Length: 387
Ligand SMILES: Cc1ncc(COP(=O)(O)O)c(C=O)c1O
Image (cartoon, rainbow, N blue to C red; front, side, top):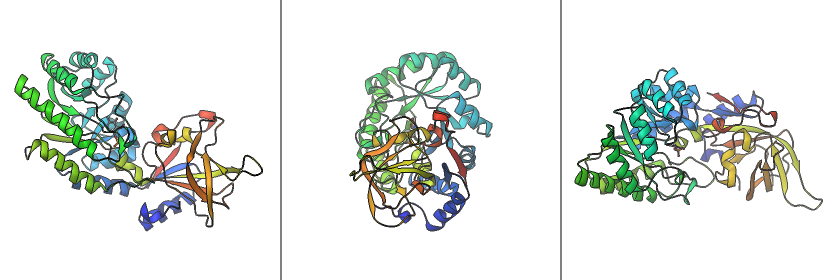
C-alpha cells in the first residue's frame, strides 16, 4: 500500500504544512484552518437548510472555535469545561446545546445559569434533573440506532434509548414543564453505510407521528448527530452523496415540510485538515529471520492515536523515503504493550526507513490532541499548530 498525497491534500496546502513542519521538533499536529473552513462550507452547501452544531470534542482549539464562531456555527458541548471555553470565545448561549446525556445535576444548573436552554437526554433520572435545574428548557431525546458494524468508531450502544422510551420521556418532559422539542441520534462516527440514516430517520418519524396523534405534542427538531466521513485509508462516499441520500430519506418521511434539522459534525469538519508529524525512534526485528519489522515512533496510543484501538481508524501514513515497501508493525514510544497501533492490518513502509526519519499521519486533525494523555511515561501532551 502506498499513500498518494494528492488523494488527501491540495499540493500547495501540503507543501505549506510540510515547510512549517520542517521547522519544528516532532511530535505535533499541524492543522490547515482553510481546509476546516472549506469543510464547513461544503457541509452547509450540502445541507443548506440545516443548523450546524460543531462537536467541540473533536478538537477544542480556540483557533477552531473562533473560526467556526465567525462562520456562524453553533456548538455541541459535552462538559462545563468545554462550555467555559466556548463562551470565553464570545459564543452566545443561544448557539449552544448540552449534547451529553451523561451529566451531573449541578452541571445542568451551570449550563442553565450561563443561559443555555437546549438539552439532550436519554434517561428519566437525567430528565428529572433537567426539569429541576433547567426549568422550561427545550429537550431532545436521543434514540438508539443501528450501524455499529459499519461505523469505524461506533457510538450507538452507550447512548440513546429505545423509541418507545423516547416517547415516554418526551411526554414526561411536557408534564415536568419542559419543552419536548425533538429527537436526536448518532449513527456512529465515521459511518460508512449511508442507509443507516434511513432507518434512524424512520424511527424518528414514528415518534413524531405517535406524539402528535396520541398526545397532542408537536415536536420541532431532528438532531442527526455526526458520523459524516473523514478521508482515511478506507474510502467512503463523498459528502455530496451523503447529503443527497440523507435529504432523500428526510423527504421520503417528512415531505417538504421538514422540521428544524441539526447536524453535529466533528470528525468530518476537522480530521482532514491535520497532519500528525512523528519521528521514527527505532526500527527492529524480533529474531534473526523475522520478515516483519517493528517501527516504533515518537507518537502512540497515548499521545493522540487512541482511535487506533482495535485498529478502528486506519490513518494514512506517508513517508518521503522512496524505495521498496515491506510490511511493518507500528508501535508507540511508551513502556506499555497496549501501545501498538497497527499489527494485523499490514502497513507497508520503505525498507530503508531508519531512526530519525519522519512519518506523516494524514487526516489526524480530529480526536488526536483532545485524546492525548498529559504525562503518560513523562511524555508531554501532543502539541498542535494552526496555520
Ligand atoms: C453527541 C455527539 N454529537 C456529535 C459527535 C461528533 O461525531 P462525529 O465526529 O462523527 O462527527 C459526537 C462524537 O462523539 C457526539 O458524541
